[in-house]
Image 1 (spheres, rainbow, N blue to C red):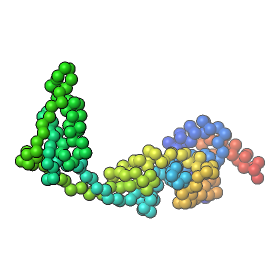
Image 2 (image 1 turned 90 degrees about the vertical axis):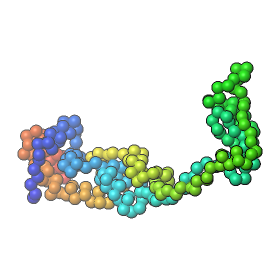
Image 3 (image 1 turned 180 degrees about the vertical axis):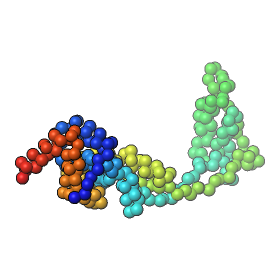
Image 4 (image 1 turned 60 degrees about the vertical axis):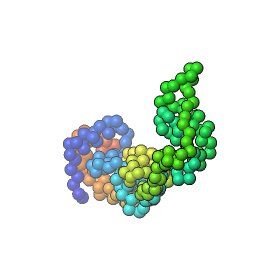
Length: 244
């Protein structure tokens, strides 16, 4: 039988656990010990109702199987031109230079009235109200001054979450969203008792390997050499006799 050596830090953690959980059975105590020894951080993935050994393990599996993100292409386009080559008449705000064209806005005159009545740069008043003063021009040379070259749409590669379908600017942002909204930490002592969730295959195999009879016997042997654990070891041995 392999000899198990308990470090002082593991002894302290086990002692604190057993003092808090005086009726903990042997398997539960073993699971607590395994979690601390291997520094495990199991997580429940709410999306697929599966328990994984750690966030890192989950992300690695999802990424390698293409179940975390997908690259997608989006087009980013600026707003429509206020004036173009077909514009014959413009309405201009004298305070900001805001312009409405007769062919780029369905109601340019109403639009300019509304604009100047709310324009923060318009400090002119008449009867306590902002004046609705604006310029109108049909001069092609004036109009030409307001024509800006229409920018072509920008194509950008972004990432869509396989889980939610939401778009993110980076893979890192998708991972952060997954961690914050889809993962829930779960103590190893609670993992085997879950009946609503499955345990990821390699993690399940790890737990089964750690709970082999020879490993459990080595664990009990190591604890029996420490006086502070004697009462708990005797309790487990007595329970084992009763079960037999």
